[in-house]
Image (tube, rainbow, N blue to C red; front, side, top):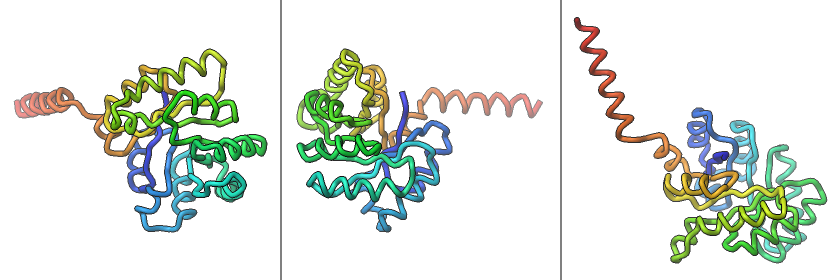
Length: 215
């Protein structure tokens, strides 16, 4: 399983990338808006930090406009992946972009049927939103398992990105369910590095070392 970081905060990306575990980045217009900077500048800087897929989302809702936006975004860097909303127009745009050799990440996926259609249209990635499903009383990980089963049966090359990750257990469960990737907020990545027994062990090592050093 690969870990992407879900943020547009350049400092968070730098810190996470130093851990040596980040394979890509997912952004969206809301995340980039929080940074208060030019969209293309932020995306270019992210591409200079992480050598892997960088998802940048279109804001248009019509296929023709999505494709035009995507073509401009794709010029920023070869690692750019275009995030496309899971709509009928989005599927049309995904197919067109596939034929143009531009990678896509179909986002806002909440059902196995949506993921199936995105894969048939040629999406490079699909992003089921597990946390948002949990919020409305559905089990987001059940959706991941269903998509994994369907893709395995038919041999789709589309990779599954578990998105809307809220806590470390979401990452564990997504890995167990067979997601290829989890895109994870910086806070959750840092939570994943910690365990109280690790901290206790370090404290004991230091205390033991002080005892030995002072003899």
